[in-house]
Length: 134
Image (tube, rainbow, N blue to C red; front, side, top):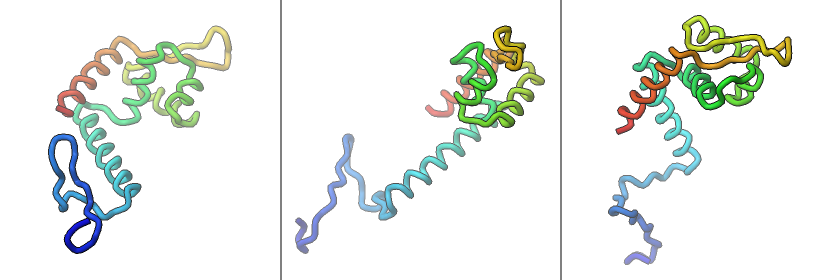
């Protein structure tokens, strides 16, 4: 307890101490929401500078991770509805970043995969993101 009988707040951290001006009286949930928003905006700005968007990055990242995947599985993987994932894949196919082909095991399905241009764009975007974070 401090001199006034009030509990003092421990502000020590692993590399030093945190001043009282850095301690927020806002609820933790509110701090997390606004921090996440700021991080997302910075991420989207970096993607935009690299010529991409969050939607493009999400789809291309999933395709890079999964390889050949059905459009419905891709939508589930990135948590996007059918019409939205179709919109993204259509746009990326027109840009030459995605190859779409009929699924030989099920006539009503299409599979998508990254094109060679996609791999180059993903590598450039990853490099840009890495340099922006340092």
